[in-house]
Image (cartoon, rainbow, N blue to C red; front, side, top):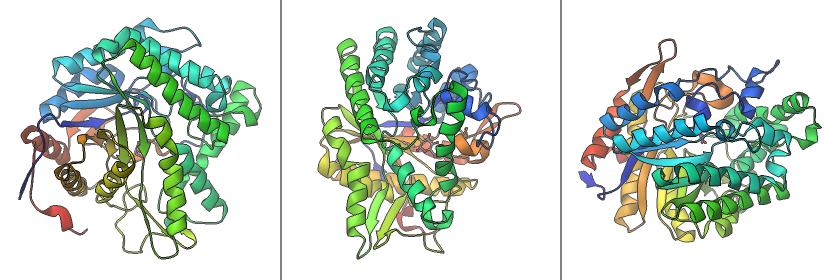
Length: 432
Ligand code: BGC
């Protein structure tokens, strides 16, 4: 069976600045990674040297057949000290955008992808009432300088990440094991330790440290909503042609009898509570990796025989279709899949994942749901935060000793689909 996608569909891959660029020295993550007793498996260091090699990387993405590149602009580079904007960093991203244009690649720009400037964190971070205005000011500056080159902006990546962190920490404290939680707890629980390290570095009380990937109070949630809305207003004022949206990471939330209330609560926290602040956006950035099944006592452990990814969560590409269908019931706007992918060292599983996920996307489009693009996470293997370089999500492999890039078969596979805009075969019901 051959499945055709609409003309104009955006086919691409995503990265985030800190995970690929290298030497992001003014960011909070850089500080945490380089502290004595750091909880990070390794340092990001020069990452995969994308700050230097972006031209080759974008050309490779285009050569493979993709037409879209989602990447993030690093706030800590643009504004390394409060109110001081760095011309060289702006020139760099201007050139990244220019190279996209030269390669007929549509850029989708994220303004904040987990990392923040150190000065922002020492000034109260993501709980401070001043952060929305500070974030909007940075976005405004970027748009004034680069807006003419930017058709799409995701203001904040995974604005709901603190909710996942809170849940995992709670379960961990109640004695759950990683296998029971089914998602990577090591990564999540260590987030708490960040704060201790940063309070030492900044000489401010532990309770005043609020990084982005952390637990959040109600006021903190409010700051996230406001940051998104104030940034959206600022971006639109300066660059009316730019489409603005937010991205959320969404599990396919399911329940077995007795788990319905838990599932509803999860849907509210992870998605529904964001709707009032997104309803005036131009698009929604949907990110999905797996599913979460709730029972009477909360999240159910993975079945013994479930196929697991490197991250410990379930291989479940069908989740994407369900999440798209759920989102559409509540949000009437174009949807872009801004992340979807799998950490694995078996690239045949990545190919199967892509095919099965895209079948779902196609079925949604066939039913009239406005899915307008698919951006795979990730363009290349990169720095997976706390877990360092051990997790491989990339379509392209990188040898970090030589920085040589080597596309995996999955990169050619997705590129072929993109070039021909068609998906062949009936792998939908394939089992592991
Ligand atoms: C994040 C990425 C991360 C990926 C894989 C997403 O939630 O946006 O930064 O690398 O998950 O864990």
